[in-house]
Image 1 (cartoon, rainbow, N blue to C red):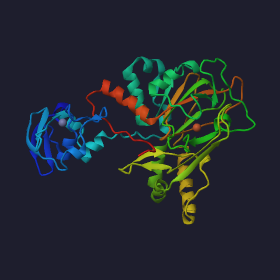
Image 2: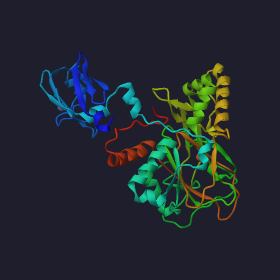
Image 3: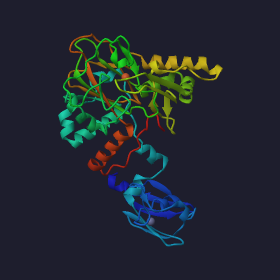
Image 4: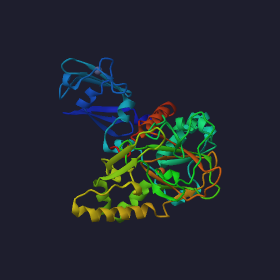
Length: 414
Ligand SMILES: [Fe+2]
Ligand SMILES: [Zn+2]
């Protein structure tokens, strides 16, 4: 069946509550009258797309009924009872917005889960190609959407140019860490004098220490946590300092299969992540963030849509007495899977390598590294999930205008 058959109206019938369209590919779509009336996008009614909608629900009947209708293969016209308002709908638009269970499932983006095997051939892009070619850039954004991460080779490799990679992903997010950071030390945007890691006596941020870090999500202490993280390597370690990644969705799938009751417990139990930052950088005020959310988020279809795991940031557990021990057991069993070598991929990051990942799905860590001069320099930036999706939607609507708008998972926010 061709794409055209999918969007051609073959027949139409009306019922008590709405209409049924028979499409040329044989599929049936049901639309309620109230839905159709509300979605009228004539000049008078306006559109939700630009937020300029003149139509108000309290000014139309609760159960609108058409007085008359007509259709051809490409459009439907309804004339409403009462004010005889005329609404016109494109056939493709209707099919792309059909809300049957099947069509909703088709529009829902499905992540591609992975384990250690992806290490031999991870999704990898060349910076200059992605920067020069919109279609290559779309492929990169789609890879981040599908796999939750990708590598980028040949990134600018200097602080002054780093924003070029960030902008390809989406609008740069600005946080309490400042505009951007280099190995968690602020650098002047125009300065060539870049900070290097030192073996600090007191550590406020684990990015400043050189021991191995178990896979984790960043900022589990914030409701507005990082969506997409972008690492850029300016100076690699000559020994150690490999990046590690784990697909949190695959870990959750295994956890659900092996420990279904404990999976449900972590979905419904909210845990607090916290972070006291006495003074992150000279001239900054102290901050104390706390955020209470589950470790695993499922959407309305009970599919995993967000992961929030950072063992270091779990605040004293504050739950009813009888739930404390079972919660510890569930966390322990989930972490065992998250840290399973069968799930962890590990790779050295070379000079000018970039690593982009969804912090609400993919956990990241690092192997220990040797202290040396010049020290390891990794810049980290982030983009909110909604800005990443916005960027993806815009690019996709230009390059693949025929594709229906996809439903992407919203991470920890559902
Ligand atoms: Fe981190
Ligand atoms: Zn209208």
